[in-house]
Length: 83
Image 1 (cartoon, helix red, strand yellow):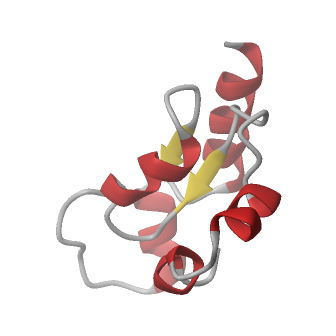
Image 2: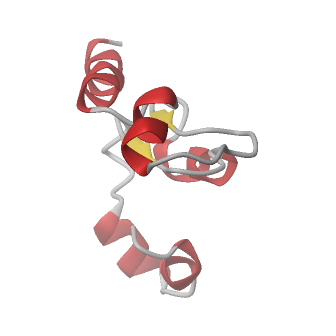
């Protein structure tokens, strides 16, 4: 979802077509605050992100330090699919 603001401006039919209620196992990846993503992933979902002010370093180093790696995302997906 490139823009949650734009998504929220859409009508309900569109929102349901993109995020059908029958799909309850979702994962969001956000290189920033995770709070609002829970609205979209639901109680059975998982959010990979950080909830504190970041640090200064090359992106590759920060992504690894904060868990934005293929391994971490795979773990989140597995957790959602297994639960």
